[in-house]
Amino acid sequence: MKTEHEKECRIFKCDKHNYHKCCYYCEDKHKCDDHCLNAPSLCGQYITRDFIFGRG
Image 1: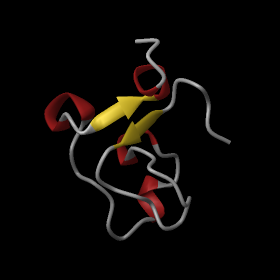
Image 2: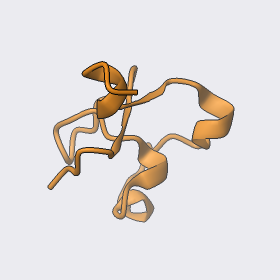
Image 3: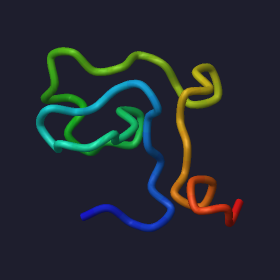
Image 4: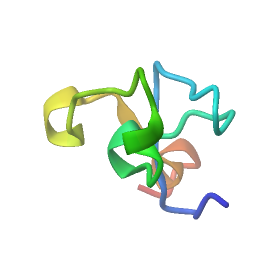
């Protein structure tokens, strides 16, 4: 289940979890064949729900 402050990706939609979860924070990343190799500090394509809803 997603938490309110969970990081999401602007460009990638995970086909296993069926939403825009940031791979860096995924507990299943080691099981995925095609996960993102970036860290959020290097990427810049991640967002938080607070940002989306104007609370950040």
